[in-house]
Length: 212
Image (cartoon, rainbow, N blue to C red):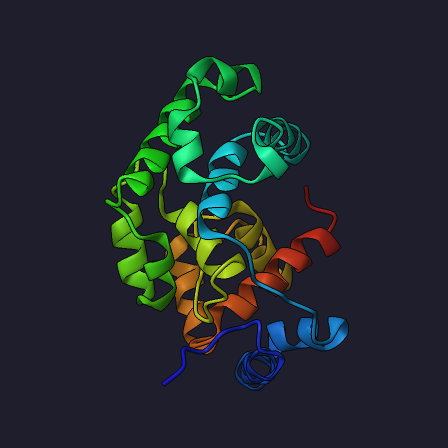
């Protein structure tokens, strides 16, 4: 049986309708914005590299560093074997911090040596993907959640520690304070098995509220 994928417009529509029917407050926001276009795709290794490079810096800074790192390689293609062999000074000159350099080298070396099969992740359950990638330095739950959503198109991902998601919940539900993890997980009982769809609209809600 084929795995459900949010890149399928019919599957996204099913998730959209499910949330509208089960959560009136978030449903009103969905009605306001309609069914958005969502096209999860891309190479798993490249997605992980970009996520690592984007950690704890502004979007503009991350984009600049990613461009410089891609410029090191032919056609801008990020590949594990090539990155594992790239001299550290080259990556540092592209703006990669010492800590992130360690993360990139650990990821690229493990993939290049076959210790991790990234393509196999596409057929694994979400929990297994989290378990395997947790073995890589610098890859935590947030990075894996971004991969599951934007590259693998999984339907039921809820990055409860993401600040934008928390702000989105605060805005949609008119909460006085930022919600805690347990509060969001309680709300998510109405969204499952389509928490990813809810997450995408909560991110949009944060921007609609003027959030950064």
